[in-house]
Amino acid sequence: MLRPAMSLRVPTETAYAKINLALHVRARRDDGYHEIESLFAFCEDGDVLTATPRDDGALTLAIEGPFAGDLAADADNLVLRAARALRNASGSQLGADLALTKNLPVASGIGGGSADAAATLRLLMTLWEVDAPAVDLPGIGRSLGADVPACLASGTLFGSGVGEQLQPIDLDLSGTPILLVNPLIPCPTGPVFAEWDGVDRGPLDPNAWQRGRNDLAASAIDLVSEIDEVLAVLKAQLPRVARMSGSGATCFALFGNEAQRDAAADRLIADHPDWWIMTSSLR
Figure (cartoon, rainbow, N blue to C red):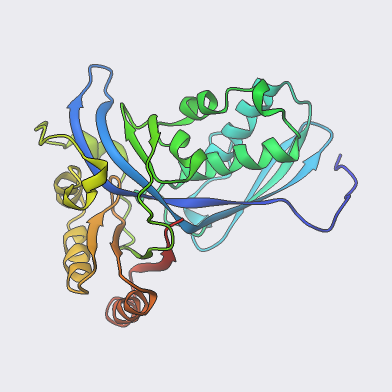
């Protein structure tokens, strides 16, 4: 049964949209994963998760929002998988009614399910009053997906290995205006990595990330040709940087100020009403 409400405030956590400011693929491993180097950053906005505690141990999930129809609230959803993993690790007997507002497109290269899983872990750690030293939260994250540890921190990080080896980087990017654009065509991660040409084009210097690249862009464009148009349109707005994030199809542009970003967003909304467009700032 539901625990009696102690407060009108419902615990809330944001699943911050993840941005790969640069993504270098270095090698394909024998286990099917890829060695990468990436500079992760996170937007102030994303999906939103709320939770109400239960004493009976049950875990439920309801999904709403503009992209709710693209995601099933079944046992394999990363939100419920994260909740089960934390409960098993902590020994908690509590449950929760979870509600996810899905604001970000699915299979879009900006964290998605990984960010949702990380937000679930952060939220339930507080809701269930789990003692942080009692659980290996990064280990739980790694068991759920390569991007989950970075999404747990949701800060500016240099990632290596398969993305799970993380090092905080101080680049003073907080507050940088960002414009995100997606042509609303799913771009699943697996096929994009599978189409990578296998060429190691060199390491990523996180302090010179502007000169970096996204080594998955070519294979993503082969699968979703509209990404090329999105990038061309973004570059025409004269941003500081325009690049594809992750395995696509979302692309981003960084601007010097909010007025430039908002003017670019207005032009794109008018010219491409069928695209998903979000304005935000880096955390």
